[in-house]
Length: 259
Image (cartoon, rainbow, N blue to C red):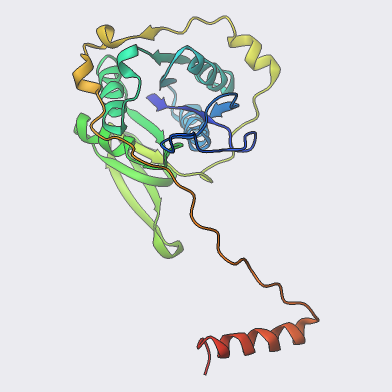
């Protein structure tokens, strides 16, 4: 089975203090530490586990600048067979539709049975996987937390409201957006990183993909970022268990929660 996993280089929230820029339309990106998108890591691990069982290969692809090559090498050190960097000045500032258009052009140049993305990335829109599937005219499932391969079909489980699980049988090829918790991504050691350090990673631009700037130009413009107003904060109840319960009941009655 040939699997393509779409990954992204994003600011590492565990290593950065995220602040808004002076214009209020983006975060301040100077001196940020970057890493691979968390959801994408689970997607790559799931692809590797599928190939371990069914055979085939895993290719990772990303849209970004030269520095985005580091996340491809990181996922190759994890076990992916190949990496592809999609980079061009025309791609800068592309919105979700533009990114999906670029990825679709890359998919058209290969032959993939299964395409995986993370459930969402740093902007939280969770839209690229669905858009990509629509452009490719293939089945799509989001928030996938279980995959079983059955020949030319797969059975997927989806996380839905109320903690329920929804099961579907889907024909290949298809696109799936992977939820965290579907597996435990494997550790990437120094030996693996050194092994792929000198592996050539092809870079494809707009011309290589048969795209013009208009096809990927952003149709959505971000106008504003803002932090919500701070509330009054929480009141901490002190005392032993019985005292806390009594105080909580009194508060609920006072606010109309209990009669």
